[in-house]
Amino acid sequence: MHIMFNNPLVYVVEYAGLEAVEVIDKRIGRGVLIRDDAARRFREELQALVDHEEEVGPEEFDAFMGPWEALLTQPAIYH
Image 1 (cartoon, rainbow, N blue to C red):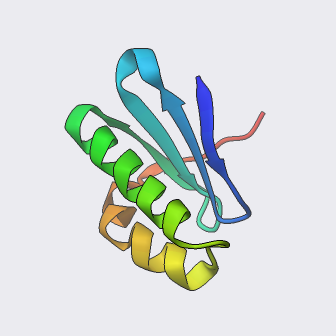
Image 2 (cartoon, rainbow, N blue to C red):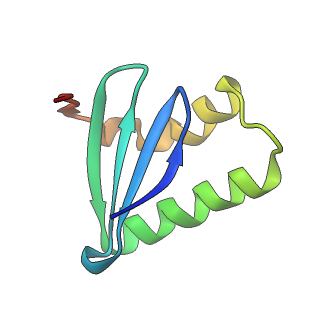
C-alpha cells in the first residue's frame, strides 16, 4: 500500500500488487477501488494533473474527478 495523494479533497492509495488504486473523495465521503487498465489511467491522469499544477485547487480537482464521480459509490468509513 502506498499513499499516492492526500489533500483536503481527495485521498488516493495505490495497491501495486493488485494493480489497483483506492480513491476517496473527502467532500462527499465516498470512494471506489479501481483496478487494472482503469487504475493505470487514473494514476497517469492524476500524475499529469499534479505535475502540471504547483498547487491543485478545488476547481482543478472538480474537473479532474468529473469523469470518475459515477464510480464513487462506496461510503468511506473511518475507524
